[in-house]
Length: 216
Image 1 (cartoon, rainbow, N blue to C red):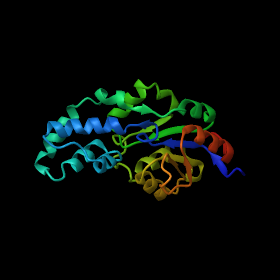
Image 2: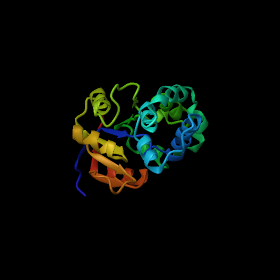
Image 3: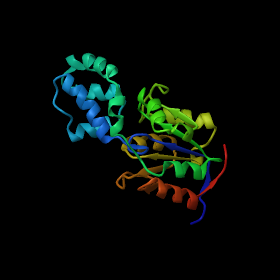
Image 4: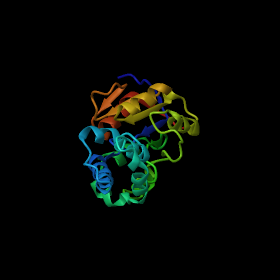
């Protein structure tokens, strides 16, 4: 395979890419629902909250009970996510992938998580693996708005063609499409993307075979 270009930056989504957080999110939002007297999440609702900020997720879950939204948001802010972190499953191969490209390639995270992201990186010892982390607290407009990704590109002074973004949902497709950043669909063969991989090991091979690595 011929080298297609220079890679200077690799950006990761968090949920569904760095971690399988499905069951952790289910337990977290079910705890909020239970406290408010609401039935547990449906599978469809779980798919939606997987992609949203915590605040938007709560507003969505209580869309049919607007009188409970403020109370539910207050409870959500007091609910310690660390109770559910043991349900998070880190995706194998991240350390090997990062070590294979750094330096010269920079690494970043773009996520709709807010206060929980820093603690996750600390607990799983992921802090050394990333040069920049942009959460929904840093970027006023959550994904799929491309603002957070634009902030990352501007920070490293790279062009879209020098970047790969690793995501797993339609939200990731929309934001990368808006900025013409190549998308690697992670464990989602049905997502429209420039590349598809099933693991970080496949991603490591893809980068090795397809790109030239140069520093920012």
